[in-house]
Length: 320
Image (cartoon, rainbow, N blue to C red; front, side, top):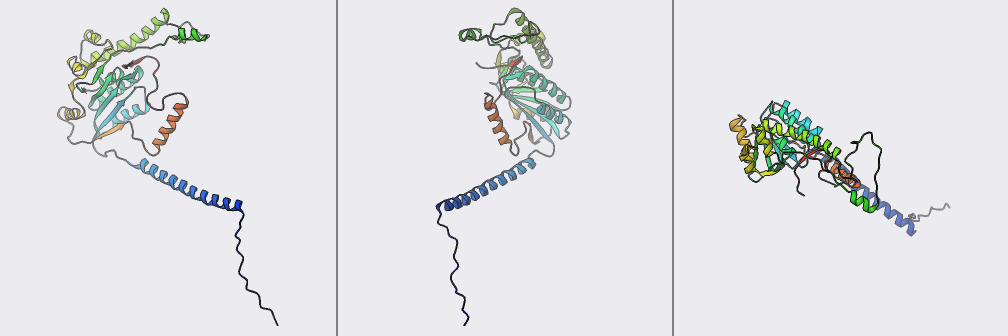
């Protein structure tokens, strides 16, 4: 008689090895972690694409706003935007919103020249908020009209070169700097010595050339006699109300008053939206770029945000 096959229950592979159990548990946890990471990466990608293609800029006629904040230096991106505004027929006028102590003389000159070319195409009005001094005031005078608050800080017409003489400190700690130069003025002034007369004369000529040009454009743009402008150009600052009396600004007010002037005196239509053309808003992963840039600056011993110390001839008003 044939035997019937036995029907024993199947044996499941259930290991009791503690190492295998721990490995399996770690594998399950890692899969969960990678799912979360993948989800976050996908969410960031979606936000980046949305930010890239989002466009909050008015599509029709508008008034453009250029913000000049902090220390001024040359900026190719800013220059390109100003040039583009001159060509854009939708932009009927431009407001230059200033809150700056100044900066490099080259940066101020770049803004002055670019805004002058823009002014030839359409109305430009400057609004000084808390501070519009030195190279920032150089920027303001390029406009057709200047507004400032009664208590805004205005002026500081001038330029300077700053030098730190650490020779006594170096002598105390026994450090001596030496170099081979192609001429007696090359690499001067040096931090380990005081400015000698020849170097001082060379720097004074450099500063004076910048200063004379600054005085000339203030006199020309503000319609002030040059002798009077020279008296105002002692490097000092004044309030907006004092600047109005000195004819360094045209009126007391802010952006609302500037817009009203554009409407009544320049024939700009009412209710036109004001759109900031510079600086451009952060888009996509701009926040990540800013964070990484801050870390890079920190690695170089620089502040993680804000302007880097300026070198060379500057037109700057600063509080010690």
